[in-house]
Every structure is written in structure tokens, then in C-alpha cells.
Image (cartoon, rainbow, N blue to C red; front, side, top):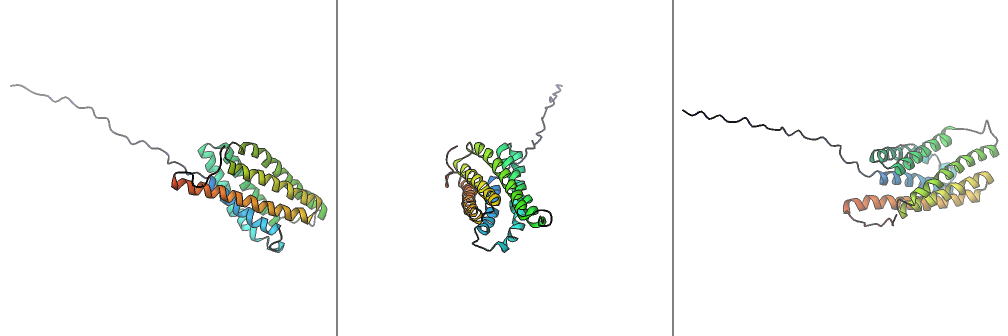
Length: 208
């Protein structure tokens, strides 16, 4: 009587591989947060709206320009984008520092009006220097982003001159350049948001 044995079959259990979900491009969020906050402040700087309305910017500076933009920078770190991470985290914290400086700091009791203006001028000048060297790197991102950084550099330097010279004319001029900067940043954000679902360049951002 023959005995047939069935050979044991070796089965490799299919263990599902866990992969991290892809991270969406955070740049449109960072640009939008920067653009909206810059636009509102710049309109006030032009005196199109009275300077007494400046506190309306404080909430935006903390929540949207600050925290939302800083969050976009952290996501850029996760994506391995050194430029985006440095830009969004830095400008996110710029808005937080602006919120604190303008909403929670009173220099009138410790510094003369001229000294306070010089201090703010130095603050703006330093941010202009940072933005200037970031502009060099922005030239390798896209024409849209490069435009934003060129305009923002000019905005910081113009506003710094306005503070050092205590000139309302320069201050208003900086506000107008700031409005153009915000519009350029909004366009770059709009392009990123729109081009993704269409899977093509509906709104061009220009070559690197």
C-alpha cells in the first residue's frame, strides 16, 4: 500500500509594508500666510487706512503669518527642502516678533522717539539683509518666488530708511512696495494650489 505524503508548503506571510504618507507641498500655505499678513499691514503703512487700525494686523501676525507659516516651514524640513524650511520658519517667526514688538512693547518710557525709530530701523535692516541673501537662493527656485524675494528685500530696506530718516514718505513708499510684494506672493501661492489638481502648469511660475 503506497503512502503518499504531501510535502509541506512554505508560505511566506505577506507583511504589509508601512510607508509614510506623502506630504503635500507646504509652499502655497506658507506663501498665502505671508501674502495676506503683508497685504493688510502694507495697506495700513500707505495710510489708505488710518494707522490707528494697525492692531487688526496683530492676530494675523501671530496666527496666520506666524504660526501657519512656521508650520509650513517645518513641513518643508520633512520634505528635505532647506530653502523652503529656512524661509518659512524665519518669516513665520518674523511675524511673531512683529506681533510682540508692536502689540506688547512700549519703548516710549525707555527710549526717545528718535532712538526707538533707530531701533526699529535696525530691526528692519537686519531682516532686509537676511532676505537679500535668501534672494540668491530663490533664483534657483522659480521666477515667481524670485520676484517675491526681490520685492521683499526692497520693502525691508525702504521701510528701514523710513525709520532711520523718520520719513513718512519713505514709510508710505514701503507700504506700496509691500502691497506689490503681497500680490506677487499670492500669485505664487495661487499657482501652487491650482497647478497641483490640474497636474499641469495652468499658472506659470517661470523657469529656475
